[in-house]
Length: 117
Length: 112
Image 1 (cartoon, rainbow over the protein chains, first blue to last red):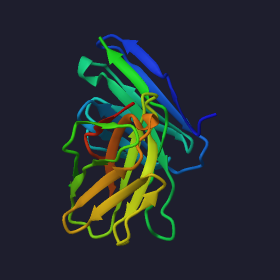
Image 2: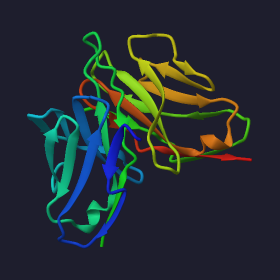
Image 3: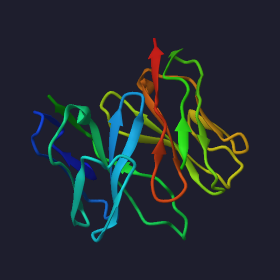
Image 4: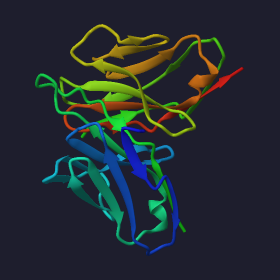
């Protein structure tokens, strides 16, 4: 089983619908992230969380919200989906700094492809 | 804010040959990490190689190596003896604190 699991893997929805993408991890990491991938733009950070009580906006948080239900679970919601939110979404985790230094490595889920019609 | 630029949207290479993917970044930080991630058609993000900015020696992982030029803020990836399985999107990424910033990606096609 994957260490970082995203559901659903693929989803087609209509404009205005509420969508939730879920992420769970078995790595025991405190830090979790949601990224969005668009062609030519790479991956852009939507939200990140360093523990259950810590939620931070990333580069492109407008139109999105998140919930950190537990250390292992981090959900991304689109309250009212629009076509330009069609993208590949990735959840990722990272560990705490080692010896006071960030290693920076992220561990990714397999992605959730969302299409908004 | 940090930015990462990959100036080659697409590249191709013959099997068994060598190819170099370019990456430049902009930062005012002095200590940071640089990464190359590979994304094959399966869309999984796979770490290829990592470089710590305070280390002068270029990182190497089997057929993958980097040319890290800190003063020029350049971090290129060299793939030697290219294999068909190297066909993928490659992303350069930068971390100076709490999160990764990615470049736009380079699509690499290895031709038989």
